Image 1 (spheres, rainbow, N blue to C red):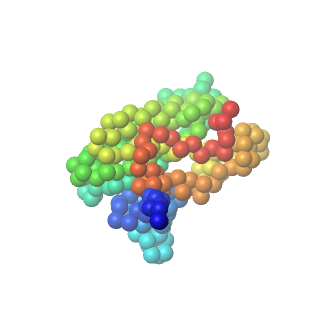
Image 2 (cartoon, rainbow, N blue to C red):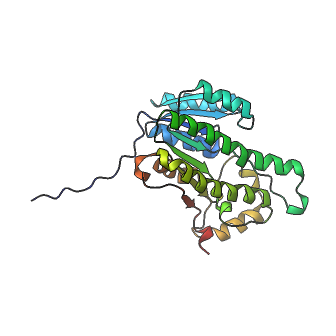
Length: 256
């Protein structure tokens, strides 16, 4: 008598629409590429038209589906207009963010506003507007927020960044509770230091790079490819029972 073996849940995203913010380079670019490769139609947004247009064109050239839309997510009026004009989404990747590393005694008000407004305020209202459409259209969607290991620990010269990412982690859990009755999931990805155009200048300081590598137990910096499987997993049915959680991809930084 044969056994009815369970099969791995489908991680394909065919027929689903995904929105990725800050999609022109680095982590956002890799998330968009991963979702498109898994079958989603990806809408890439960022302030720089040329960057996202090139990424979208390259995705389409390899036979996948993507489009570019210029959007500054710190302009909430523009964000509302964007969602009014777009079809609904099944997947949101909140990737856009910023950092102004400096000792806390040197932080100025404009530093605070720049980091917290983009990393928390804009993320919240993009999530809200996206979720409203999901609910109205009865989409069982997935919200994915790009957090950080610094949303789980502290770090020198990272007071604003840590504050914003700890806020994202707390917000994620509250969103999961609010949206679960609608079949919408909310999770975070919390990477360690990833080699991207934004972080490259930091690693030109050999002492800083050595201090980072000392804390990453696997002994290397992260790459954008280290995050691509995670974003597809959280977007797909493979993570259907997962909400309010954080995938910490830190090479062991937060183990001790």
